[in-house]
Amino acid sequence: MISARTTLGLLASLLCLSTLGVAARRYPRTGLMSRDVSPNPCYTMDGQPAECRPDFENAALGRAVEASSTCGFEPENYCKSTIGTDGNMKRNCFVCDAGNPKFSFPAAYLTDVHNPSNVTCWMSKTYDSVQYLSNVTLRLKLNKKYELTYVSLEFCSARPDSMAIYKSDDYGRTWKAFQYYSNNCRAMYNKSARSIVTKANEQEALCTEAFSQIDPLSGARVAFSTLEGRPSSANFDKSPALQDWMTATDIKLVFNKLNTLGDDSRGTDDAAQNSYYYSLSDFAVGGRCKCNGHASRCVRRKKDGKQACDCQHNTAGRDCETCKDFYQDRPWRRATKDEAHGCVGEYSQATVW
Image 1 (cartoon, rainbow, N blue to C red):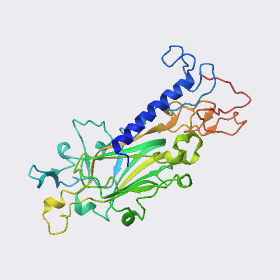
Image 2: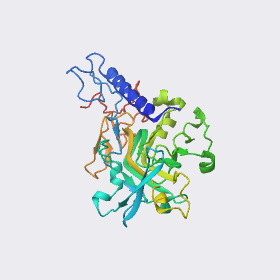
Image 3: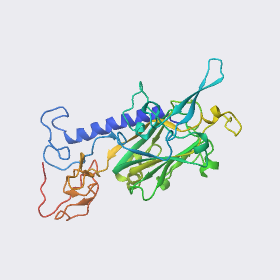
């Protein structure tokens, strides 16, 4: 099983190599650092269309997250559990109060700038309000189609016993599972923890039991890679199934069951139940604005303020998913590293700066 840290490291390495590879194809004669380079990344120096993509980014940064449960709308107690030097459990209790910034844990903290030396956390209500079957959800709206490489979560509480990551590619009208996590995949999700992905089921969500332990009690990270273990990932340009699999307009986390130490039954002291809740410090989503290889950036449209690709190669649409009027002499196609597939017509020009 590949660890979360290893997964993120591999993603960063692949991103770097991919970026350098595109640059090398685009500037074969001059070199990447030369001043004599194309002013438009979507064209080569001799004016030929070339595959181009927006920069890789944390698409969640600064975006609003809708939480179905947040503590403190009415001041309430919560407790933090730690293991003392004597090996015994210790619980220190505090107040969550949404009306006092010093004691509040809003969803805005999920997507702010993550500073390990000054960690800020979102927190749900405690045990009685959120334990199974009372699910807690977090929904991130990207407001544009993105091609996502990973979803990364860092917890202030213990990781859930069971949770799922879902994605929508139609702005929340329908949802598809991305990944399941549980201490018991079969009982919670009716999924085997031993399933693998083949070319016949590359859009299937898997379930793992590897990241649902209660230890550590805080600070654990869960990272989901959208391409890891998918057979066609090495040939992504030619796999419409994986391209659709990675495409999302929204991400939803569903926390189905809390992890506990078994001391949460009714009749126990309040400190035990008040120590169980969901809490995260970071909700990151890595990917690129989806432009199908026909734009190097996304911008705000003047007519409606919506984010859209700055389409090149005579393409059009929010995602450069169609050909412009009068440039429809051949069917639209997604650009690849081998061929830009620019749209052509009677008035086509090789280069448009």
